[in-house]
Image (cartoon, rainbow over all chains, first blue to last red; front, side, top):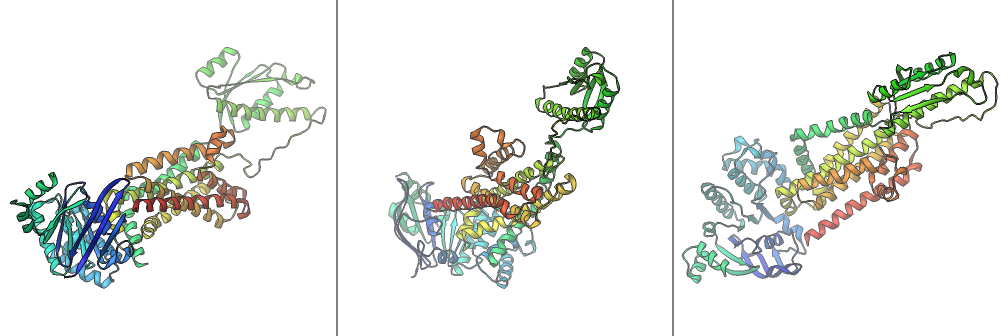
Length: 240
Length: 368
């Protein structure tokens, strides 16, 4: 299988504080890769480096076949990004948001029109395409933000705690959307605090204090550490 | 280019959909210019004066008439003793009192001359000073006419001409000052707010991860505000011309150019503020206190820079509005061209480059 992310000996220091301590891992094409860890374990820092938003202190990071440090622009156009904090511009309508991000990712007008119609019909929202984002509930906002992040059909999408604060039913629907994206050939890199969601991933890493403590499929990890659920695993590792 | 236009369009939608801000943006300059134009004035019109005329002859009547017809004073009351004057000051009926000694007509022809006394309410020292000056001017004018008639002694005559602003209108100073204040406030505050808003909401991160270049993001955010600020500059100049009779002696081109330069400079300052501030609140306070007060106090538009203590004079050199006010006055009032204000323009350009350079520097540090 192809490796879409390859990280070798990644170190990120802020002064004397080591946020990422010698990370080495890879993500395979087409998988859902879960990035877990307690708050402050260094997940966000690592994700920022993978997205080209921040430069590593040392180490090599290859994303979608390009070195992030040398060729950040190539990397940026082949990835999508969605964070829990921002879900589309509140004072713009659904269509305006999708058109904006579509244009930013250099889609043609035609492509934007077609994909907008397609995406919104799938969500049963085409009739409400001119509604402003701030009139939607958080769950809908997150679903729309995800649709926007994959509108340009990136090879890889980063999801930073995409489901925080939404109800279980919406979370379920959101994961269905993730599976659909994977079926379309998009690799998913996701951070989450919900351990039931970790079970949906093909492979997960557990980060503790800037280091990767464990990395494998959820079932293999549970067996290895002798625990019943991912929740128990998290508690066991994070407490160490 | 297409992405850039899409981004500017998005920014314009943000501005247009926030109609309360739009109202503030367009009404604030108008309100400011009216308030400052009418309130901040050192002119005196129809000040109340009281007169104790002990002479009551032809000469004193002529003097009183001259004072009344000067347009500066309104004779409120005539007194017959000192107590009445005191009472009138205390009840704030009058701001100035004139006491004319007896036999003025006869004494004025004598070598020693006649004397009058001016009493002013100095609890408001500035006004008192101005009123006394105005009144003294009227009196010496009168004296001059009187003396001229009988024996034409040649007293050296001082002829004063106030160049560029013959009527000493206060608005000649307040309009450029208000323009400086309003433009820097709107431009710097609005850009810093709009950039920190994206920081707060997390959308800036999304934009930085996108193929958009950082400079495209910044330019895209700033572009609509250049247009907005230019509209404001035009509305202020139009108000100055039609409401306050400001002249535009120099060229419209240079007036436009100076304004554009100043607006760009202010936007650069706004960008710089937004690289320092992480929340809209901080950005707002930084622009309000960091820009508004120094502009009002130190740019020389209300308080003359020459009268300030040296440290403050030095400080005033560090404020961009000072140079803008100077350049605007050169063009609008004195009619000077590029040769007369290249220094001011150079300084403003240096500020612009400085603010943008610092912002880029700061941004690079953040990336590391």
